[in-house]
Image (cartoon, rainbow, N blue to C red):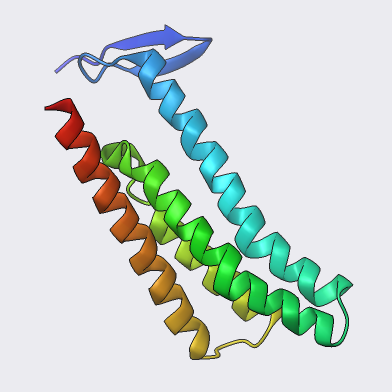
Amino acid sequence: MSSHYFRYNGCKFAWLGNIDMERCCGMVKKNSICIAVSAALMLLFPWCAVNFIKGDGGMAACFLLFFAVNPMAAVAMGVISGRNVRSSWFQPILLAVLFLLGAWAFFNMGEKAFLLYAAVYLFLGCAAMLATSFVVRKRVG
């Protein structure tokens, strides 16, 4: 079996069949943006809350993160990934894993309560992804 290669924007790719490169590169860009936003929300915000907000303000910021910002981010990532589940299915899982890493790194390593929060964020993200996928498929036909 001979291997075939083609070039796109200076990069060498293996031929895998009929590939729409514009669509493929667009999905890579969209996934990269989602990964960066997830990392910022789940790693950078808790770090800022721990290092820059002192006393009771830090606790209020953590409540705001855990009960408002992170659930909205999980639902938003689910909606974004639900538009194209084939290429973005991992986004809700990544968001939950990044939350767990950030919470354990900046608050208390091995705390079991953070597993529950991560499971809830994973559930919210997957439910939003499935609902969005259902709505998109219903619209298309």
